Image (cartoon, rainbow, N blue to C red; front, side, top):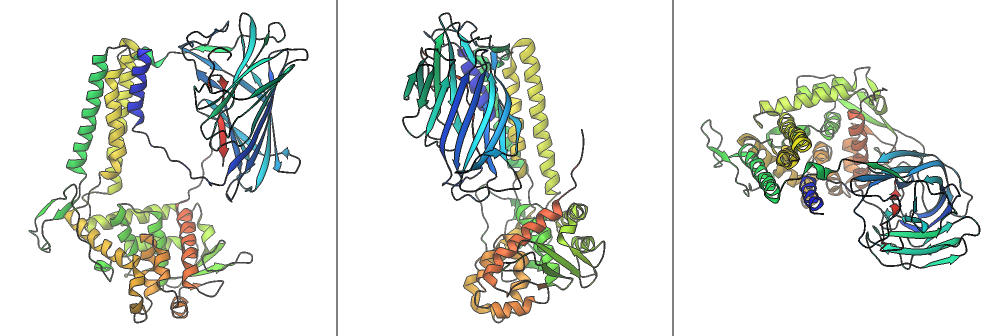
Length: 617
């Protein structure tokens, strides 16, 4: 057992460098019931029928559910005192189960289930059945019927045969009602056991036996992450029980057979690696800034920004240095994003270079930037007033004529986007905001980190396979992953860039707190439209528009020159619409063409074969 514990610790050390992104789900979503029937055939196969009643609650974006069926698992050490099967699943082995003959049906509750679209894919040790159509959403309560044939699930013992199975795996939602039926050939006397709860729980659950049928239910709501494991046994000679699908594997423990001193040294080296990575950031990743406010001279003193240092942000009522929205976007997050190009398109419209017209799609549209399409019309050609990246965007939009629909740019504008982004980075370098391109800096450190991790993993594998001393390579893997994870923090601003950032933050403060300046807006011509592109970059369109609530007539007249909508202008509802338009433009300009190419003794919950679970999508 000791090698396994040491190995688990090493694996945990590596896994802390990984990141997981969890998708939010609707709180009202639930599994009403899970009913499954296991018909054990004389040849040892099992015909399974699952009926899953799923309540999607208030969710409006679901397409169906997915069901995970475990296809293989690594064997564990035999339980002490437990009777062992004739073909035990031992340490250093893996057990497989085979599924075939799938039939999937579904329908809203109360209707007859019919065949539906589904697909399958391998996800780790599970076969995932993804049920539903990505182009169709479902709502309310649905019933899903999943039928299949299962092989390799039975175990033969000296005095009986047995099905020890995790019938209800770990689902992403609680299950309100569970019923599992196991049917043996007629005349069979079945004995049963049932366990539920978290993995390895010995809490029992209710069951009944009626001749050749055993029925299992849950005593309570099965919570998220809990399982229900059933055991059914019968006398030998009734069902043919072929040997299970077992295969030898080279365990990870075979790579780690050193003593505690070796592992302790590896852990210590890993800690030193983390310290080294932190020192690299301390030396190369921190922004520079001016020591005093008197920086407008060639000899202005600079220093590295302290770890917990911050600059006082003062409200700026005008764009500092007449910076355009996209330029502010670059200094803010060190990236030239598609949203920066989106803001540039709207800024060009506000400045008279193009006009945006909504193309109405159906009825019920309430604003210019609602779902549908938009026509862009060129009003004047690029001139000397435009920065190189702005000229690139304007020329790219109208490369095929003076009018273009937004949808026509899909899979075509990406080359223009790349050139405009390059121009933005060159503009930032020309303004001396960064010592080199932020994207290049990130790429260099990611490459170094991944390179160190890959070399460390290769070194660990070779040393582990030959000398069983793989722990020596683990610190390199950990340090490399840590460096790659820290790469986004490695680009640094120059003192000039830090000063520009401070002033941009001041202007963002003004735009994001616009409601406190409402009285000034009556006196400033076209201020709503002029600063709208900045609000897009700052992510505060809704706050900016709300500040003009009650000034719809004035704002509508001023903005009529650059857009034509399908409804009477309203600043508040417009804020939602403009964000929708921004999202559409961002995804369109960044889209690229797709490429083509080729149980009765010492049982517990989760202790049997199978398992899995599922969720909605």
